[in-house]
Structures are given as structure tokens and as C-alpha cells.
Length: 112
Image (cartoon, rainbow, N blue to C red):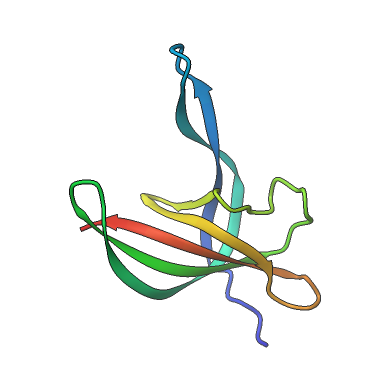
């Protein structure tokens, strides 16, 4: 297995809920740090969105491993941001037996 080409700079973001003063909350995002990653496109599909069709494309994002519990280790429901592009993390697993890299299965959603 060859080493991944970690040439894309991504920002790892976690959801942030803040009270809205009316008993609910507002959803926002907070940056957890920057990672260098390899981003490989998978298959795409069209899905129904609210009032419009959306295109969903699967991506496999590989990055250097971080220990379990570290804020630098991605988790499902977090996301990667690259400028205006957003990749929602669906799952995270070790790429190799030595645990040097992590593979994140992600999805990018684009309004059509």
C-alpha cells in the first residue's frame, strides 16, 4: 500500500449549539484545527432536497492518524471545510494496520 498524497488543506469543524433564548438552540460550527489530507471522489447521486434537487457525492478523505479522544481525530457528525466546500463525516477508520492514517467516509452536498 502506497502512502497517501496529503496535499489538500482542510479545516476540521465540530457542531456548536448555542441557546437562542427561546428554549431552543442555534446550530453553528467551530474550527477544531487544520489537517493535510488526500481527497478522493467516489460515486454521486441525485436526491430530493427541500424545494430543490441536490447532488450528493461520496468522498474518501485520508489524513494522518490522531489518538482516540484527541480533538484532532475526526468523528461522525463533524465536517471538513475547504473554502466554500463542505464534506460531512459519516465514518472514521484506521487505514493501515500500523494506525498511521485515518480514512474518513464523507459526503458533499450541492444544490442543483
